[in-house]
Amino acid sequence: MSKPSYLAQRGRQWYFRTSVPRALYQLFGQQKITIPLGDSPSAAEREGAHLLAACKGLFARAAVMTPEAVAAELKALRHMRAPDTSTRELAYADALADFAMAGMYGRPMGPMGAEERDKARAP
Image (cartoon, rainbow, N blue to C red; front, side, top):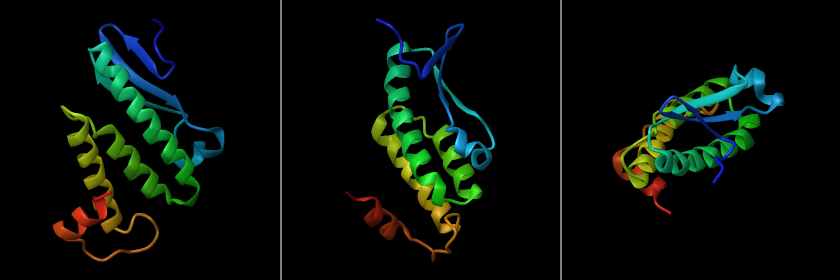
């Protein structure tokens, strides 16, 4: 079985790696995104697929985002690793809500309490 193109291995450590579209180099301030995934190949493949989907979504939204918002989402992506997917996704949603509260999307938003955040996060 061949490894997906978004996974790279150095020693025993696995990494997620994807290229930033050329048109977005200046906005992202880098050409590649690299995130460590640990030493388990199966967990790296699972988390890598999740990160790839998140990065593609970020690339699609980036044209209407401020550079600060892009940096904030990249930071959230790098810190969204958690023991299980549901916890990781909640951590990512919380981080995005925090950045939105700070007005990172170019429009200031009022303070969001825990109840409002939970309502916004609900499917």
